[in-house]
Length: 124
Image 1 (tube, one colour):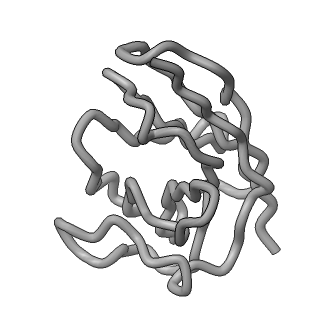
Image 2 (tube, rainbow, N blue to C red):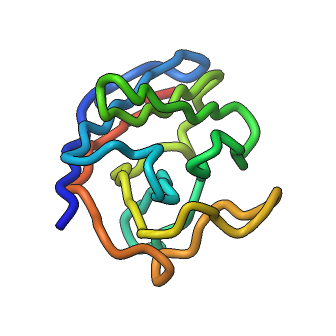
């Protein structure tokens, strides 16, 4: 069982930046594909970034995903934020060392473990 806890969300003005963190109960680089997802009210959950166990990443423009093996943590750096980035952001994991390739941003049904989410609100 993998436990994930997100933090770092909040309110920011358009054009600003935020860094989200996800504390994991396992070493996320040890055989897991990790992902960040978001869900806006009335919309489907969508993937925004993934990272393989070997550190290979796929990200939406303006986003950077990274992990700190020593801290069992996953991060999402978001820059030049826009109002359409407003959503609940989730950290997720699946027991698979490799995600879906260079352009794979994550599909919710591919992931097994989920955090509770952290809210990001971008005001114009």
